[in-house]
Structures are given as structure tokens and as C-alpha cells.
Image (tube, rainbow, N blue to C red; front, side):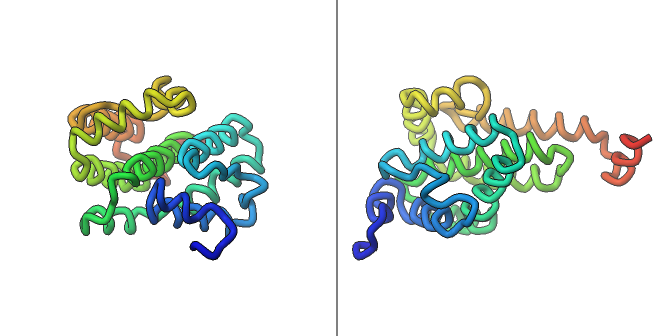
Length: 200
């Protein structure tokens, strides 16, 4: 990384190897890349991820939605990798805010564009539960303060767009409530029957 003329070294210092992985994913993605995605300065990398995602979300045209999809599905680590990193205790303290944002944006994407995919939402909630079991309450409190102090993060985390609580119990309660609401929405019927009901 030291020999490359990009920000990967500085991103590793700020947000660990998960940050570097996402950074190179963005650089290698045709619809994103440096022109579409503001990567510098490295210390703002995670803030820029949130800003980019929600700028595209607000535009909501075909190109913007394509970029959101590529960011989440091609550049972010997949759920199995996140679970593996949690189980092997391989997530560094400096990576916590990034992993939290990744999971929050994955859930946001499902809830806004694929809400009937209950299986996909449940998988994300399962990974989030594992993450919040892994993170100590002290680190959650620090994350909460950090998100509250940043102007960009505050916009998304304190206007009830994304979840941010100082304690694990709050997250678990919110996820349980969300799961219950989604189950009530589908009423336990099969997806095919639900779609047929919508058509009728």
C-alpha cells in the first residue's frame, strides 16, 4: 500500500483493513470510482460513505439507485465475512464505526427497496445482533457520542433515519420490534400469495 499513489495507507490507519477493502472495492467498481465518490480526505472516509449513499438515495433516479446497489452489494463486505470477523474477534476498535455504518446502510437498503424480502432483512438483523453482542457497552457509548458530534452523521443518526443508541439493550429491543412489525406486515403468508393478492 505504501507504494500506491492513493489513500489506502491513510484509510488503513484510520479505519483498518475493512476500510481498505471497501476503498479498493469502490475504486474497482465501474459505476463508482474516484470521480463519482469523494474519497479524500481519508479521515472523512466513513462520513463520505454515508453522505454518498444518502445523496444517491435522495436523488432516487435510476443511475443513483444503481450506485447505491453497487456500493452495498459490491463494495461492502458480505454478511458471512462480517460474521466470520466477529466470531474470530478480528474487528479492531477503529473499525467499529465503519462496520456499524455498513450494517445500518444494508438494513436501510432492504427496508426502502426490498421490504418484502423478509429473509434478507432477517439475515441483516442476525448479523447486527452478533455485532452488538460483540461490541462492549463502553464502545457503544463512545460510538454514540462520536456520531452525535459529527454534523453529517448527526443528520442521519439523530433524525431517526439510522439507529443509534448508547446501550446494547436499546438495539436488541429495536430489532425485536422491527422483526415483529415485518412479520405482521406479511402476516406469515407466502411471498407468491402476497404478490398475487397485490395484483388482484
